[in-house]
Image (cartoon, rainbow, N blue to C red; front, side, top):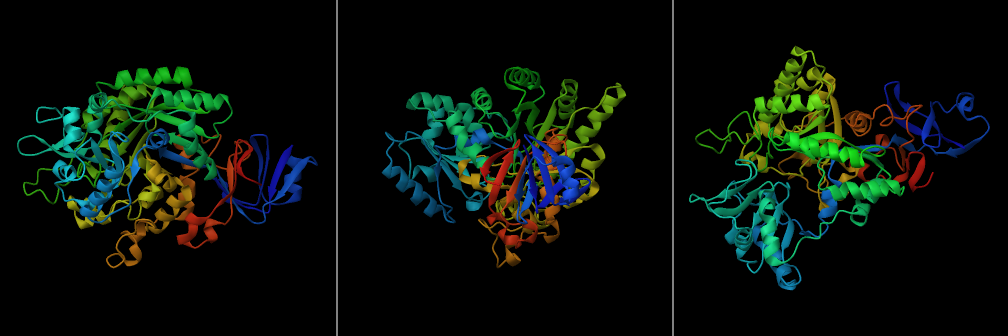
Amino acid sequence: MKTLLRNAKIFTASPKGDWAEALVYEDDKILYVGRDDREEWEKVTGNDVKEIDAEGKAVFPGFIDSHIHPAAVAMSAWHIKVPMFDKVEDFLDHIGEYARKHPKEEIPFLYFEYYPTDMFDVGGPTKELLDRVINDRPCLCQDFGEHMHWVNSRMLELMEVDASTPDPVPGLEMFERDEDGNPTGWVKEFAWQHFAEKMYEKIGWTPPETVDEDTLMPVLDFFKEHGITAVFDAVIESEEQLEALKRLEKQGKLKVFYDAAVRFWSYEDLPEKIALLRDYQKKYGGGQLQIRTMKLFLDGTNEAGNGALLEPHINDPQKENYGEIKMERDELVNCLLLCNEEGLDVHIHIVGDRAFRTGWQAVEQAQGVAAGKGKPWNIQVVLAHCEMVAPEDMGKPAQLGISINWSCHWSGGYFGEEAKNFISEEKWNRMYRFNEMIASGAQVAFSSDVVTYYELERADPLFGIQIANTRIDPQFPLDAERYEGSVRPMKDARIPLSDLFRGYTIEGARQLHKQDVMGSLEAGKTANFCVLAQNPFETEKNKIKDITFAAVVYEGEVIHGAL
C-alpha cells in the first residue's frame, strides 16, 4: 500500500527546490514529492493510500554522517570516563582515587579518557607526574583531542619502550623524549599501540575490544534514534567488524547504509592495503555494505603541534618547526595515481594549511599526469577536517573537484585554545571556515568524527548543526568574558542552516556515490527520511540540539518513533 505524508514542511535537498508539502512512498521507494494538492498526489496514489497528517511537522532526508568511527566507539566501552578538570592536581586526585577503589587484580590496565589538552604546556605531561598516583600497573590517559596519550613508567617498562626504541612514524606517531632520548611519558598519535601486545602478554590480560553484534548494536541504535540512515566509517578496525555487520544485514537488523575505508600509511604499503580492501569487497561488499575508499592521515592535529603548517610554530625561536607531515607531495601523487588506476577513492585526514596545500597540489599534479597518459580521472579525493586553509587556497577544491568533509561539532569551543601554543591569534581566528568553499561550488559534506562512547551523544546531527550555525559549543563553551557570547571567532564563519542540512544529506550522499538513490527526497529515490518534532528553521538557534525525532524511516520502514 502507498503511504501519503501530507501537511508537512519537507526539506527536500533537491535542486528543484528545497521545500515541499507532501510525500508519497510505497515499500522502499518515493513516488511523489511536491505540493499538498489532492489533484497532484492522487495521480500517484489513486484510491489505495494510507494518509498521514504530519500536522505541520518538519521532514528531512535521512541524515548521513560521512566521517565517523562506529567500531572504535564499540571498542571503547571499557575505557574509564573522567569528568573534565581544569587543574592537573584535581585530575590526578580523581584517577588516583579510582585506582585505589579498583585494584590491579580487578583492572590490570587503566585507560582514562579524557584530560584537557590545554592542561599542559607544549612540553606535555610526564610519566613521573602520573607515577605519583598510579605506579602499580600500566596506566594511560587520553587527551581530549584523541590524538595524544599520557602513560606512566610502568606502561613504558612493560611495552619495552626506552631510548633505543624507534618511533613508528618519526615526527608524527612517536614518543616524546628528553635530551637523552628517554620517553617522557607523552605519546603522540597511537604510537603506543605498536608495542601494546608485549604489555598485554606480560600482564596476562587483553582489552575487551571484541567488535560483534552485541557491541555494535548500541551504536547502530543511536543512529536509528537520531535519523542517521547512512555512515562512512573512516577506518575499518578489524575484519570481525565487517563479519558482524554482514551478519546483521542478513538478519535484517542493519538499518543503515554502511560505507567504510581501509587505512594505509605510505606508498610502500599501499598495494598490500589495496589487496586487503579487495578481499573485504569480495567477502562483505554489496547490499548495505560498501568498501571502496583508502584512508590516509597526512598530518596530526593543531592542538598537538603536529599539524603541517605553512609558517613555523610561534614558540620556536629557530623558526624551523613547521609541524609534521606524513608524506610529501611526490609520494602522495604516486598514491593517488595508483588509487586512480584501481578506481578507489582516497579520504585524507588534513588539519594544517601546509597539509591542505600539499593535498590539492598532489591532486592537481596527479590529474595532470593521468591526463597526459590519456587516462580518465575517475576517483573522488576527500580532504577531511581542513581546519586551517590559506585564503588563496579556498577555491581549489571546486576547481579540482576535490570533496571536503567537516566535523560540525568542532566548530565552537570543543578543542579550546591549545592550538595557540603553535599558531598566531590571526591564524587561530581563521580556522574552521567553509562558507567560502561552499560559495565557490565545492562539494562540502558534514560529519561528527566521533570515536568513543564518551562523545557519542555529539554525533547527533542536530547537535553538530547547531554548533556550526552558532560557533558556540553548549558543552564546552569558550570563556564568555573573552569571547562575546562564547562565540568562536570568526562570526562570519557560521554556516547557514540550509547549507548544513544539505551537507548532512545530499552532499554526504555524493561522497558515498549514492546521490542517485539517497540524500534528497525526490521521486525514484529510496524512502529514507525523518520527521522532527520541531522545525529547526523555526526554532531558537540555541535549541536546535534539543529537537527530538518523532519518526525515522529507513527504506520505507519506520525504525524509530511512529508516523
